[in-house]
Length: 152
Image 1 (cartoon, rainbow, N blue to C red):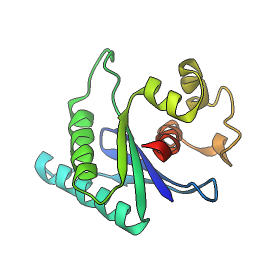
Image 2: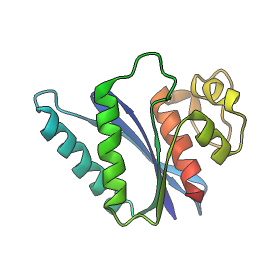
Image 3: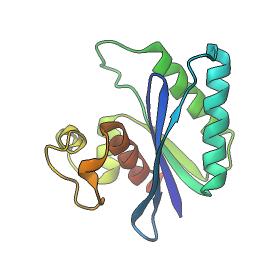
Image 4: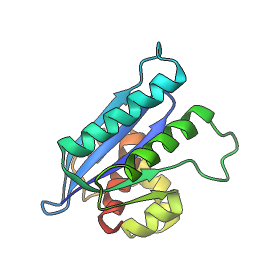
């Protein structure tokens, strides 16, 4: 079964595909949102790309790493994109999905919440994933969201 994890930041969406049978990350990519697109078209662009990824990789379950509710400054663009991705999940053929913050994702993957940021910053390596040290922090968060999606 393939799972997908997503981490959004303004202007781009990072997604990771994880094969549960092989216990391996199959793909990590960034969807760059064209700056020239007005907001409605940019959101449509994201939605269409996410649905294409779900179909292309036969994704069964997915997870979305969302903004922390306690975030000091909330980015409206990021929140809008996360909302469109949630809608794409709901209208797709996924068997299940979840929306998670750090504590939820950590629990699903099986480590303490305080380790999440240490893994993401590569302060401590996450051994189950090859080339962890070469990944960007957003890719690491997307991978954790994909790992957590196994039980969505």
